[in-house]
Length: 305
Image (tube, rainbow, N blue to C red; front, side, top):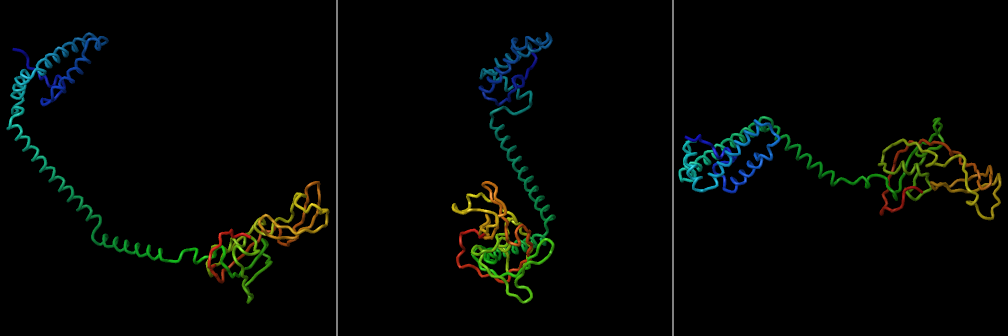
């Protein structure tokens, strides 16, 4: 009696595989077991591959024929103790299995959701949820208040605004050189972007709020310039006979107007002394914004003058 072989297992297919699937599986097996592919293996492995190829051919010879396959399949079902493939009993059984699995899956999901809900309730009891709600409401109210609150530009000094400030100005050695609004004196008033104030002072005041006090330190570049200037002689009038000791009015790069005296002429270069007593000095100011008069329409020009 011939030895029983599981042709489905030999081809690596399931019993309900289509003819096309069986054909593809056979060609794949036959290809990898072909002598041309196994020629480099040991003799023992070549013999095993040859025997397996013969078994694969036997399996395909049966499964490719519909009548032979039906007869073989009945025997396969008997040996595996399963109802005949394709009968109503088998379909009904599958439906019952599916319904049972579906019911079990629903039960598992229900238990999972209940567990998640229970875990959530343990981690977040009612009082925590209530507290979160209160915080959310407060956040919404705060957002509305901030949205309705006057913008920063409406409450701080900007370009075009007129300001009144009190201040004390001193050098790095702490000696005071100027003040306003101190000991009964009137505060100084000017319009940001439309005054002769030094740029560093204007920048310091810009952005301040009423009653705010701040300290600033102004470098010579944003104050009254360096103590000595070197200019090209072409910057002077064409008919000017530039010589040592002459005095000239000069506007610095930062826009500040100064008086200067020529101290040297070397070819095309003219050296001048900045006569402002605060030239070349770092200036320290403690400023308080006393009053802010907002401009009716903000100008588009820069704040420095």
